[in-house]
Image (cartoon, rainbow over all chains, first blue to last red; front, top):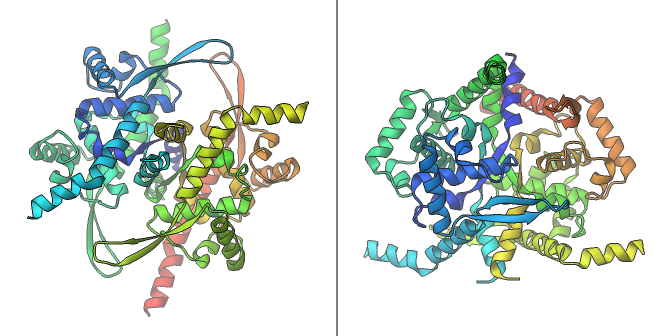
Length: 128
Length: 128
Length: 128
Length: 128
């Protein structure tokens, strides 16, 4: 392998951009660690054009079983963080994709609440 | 809260860029799911200028206990994915930061092995 | 130089995440090409912790003269895309940083207008 | 427009991750500012799945004429920064995409040269 090859492989794979808000605040929203990792895998698949990966796609990349992954996805949907979005393309074909939009909105809301007053009160309580 | 405010909060938090290679291949390297999430949190802290977060920084954002986080970090270091890098700044002050460089190299190596032959053999076996 | 070295150098430099909206729509907002490049350089400096690079920092990376850069920054400020934000840190030290927040809001607004009929009307008017 | 709408639009557009190396060093490689912007637009199109945008796609987003864009692309190819990569997909269909791989390699090389020796000489000169 020549020196360029490693670099080429790295770059060709591309990146996923993930908001710092997710890392700092998913726990505040009550999302479990493994469900957070599931969210990240959904983002990785979406970035590669796979908007609705199945449990087996996900379990190929994680140590969870298909059933555990199904349960995780269901938890995320029942908590209102994840939805399935149906869109029609130009040829009238129906597309279904996971949407994490509700999660992003909730993360921003949590940040707003955390910044305005509540957090400061806590600090004062700790210091006092 | 006006519509600009939400957008401002979102943008101000910034992003972490994570290689697709990590999501597709950490399992192949034998990294557990929760340790993978630990790696991602280290990247998130590093992006914000905190290169050596302590177990309590990490446990504030995850559901793991300080002890479980300590064990996870140790596993990553013992497997040679994570190191601590010491550098001296202009004023002679010693800085210690986690480095994930060994992990990135190993991920690229795994990709090279996966692409060259082995994967193709499997495909032929499946088709034949 | 070994193959790892190149990869290490590449990764150590880090990335800047830039919204697709910027690339697709700065022209619509009346931003000149070279001023767009100036915006991108400001983002690159900010990502590295330099929130208020001077004209000479910028001209070291671009073929524009200090004067042309000063003019470009002024154009961006006069059009209301760029502001200087003053914040006080914990020790009472005043910090000044460029803020591109007004530009991001305007880009989203342009996108909203573009999506809601208006653009199509214009096209029909042009074609008709 | 409700408060969520702006945020949704922003997030839906997605990001392009661009190496800091590009911003800090394209000038060193002799790349003109407007050609640098052309490179960034190519990355933006590629991220959206358009690997070989035509001059008119590019001129719709920039103030350059189709001819100026054609000249810029040619300059980048003649300097060996940009190539056209031909690949065959599973159905035997030939795909052509711009590749910026040669540019990334050259940027890393420039960084290596800049770090080893030259920069150290300067430091010694300053210290001596």
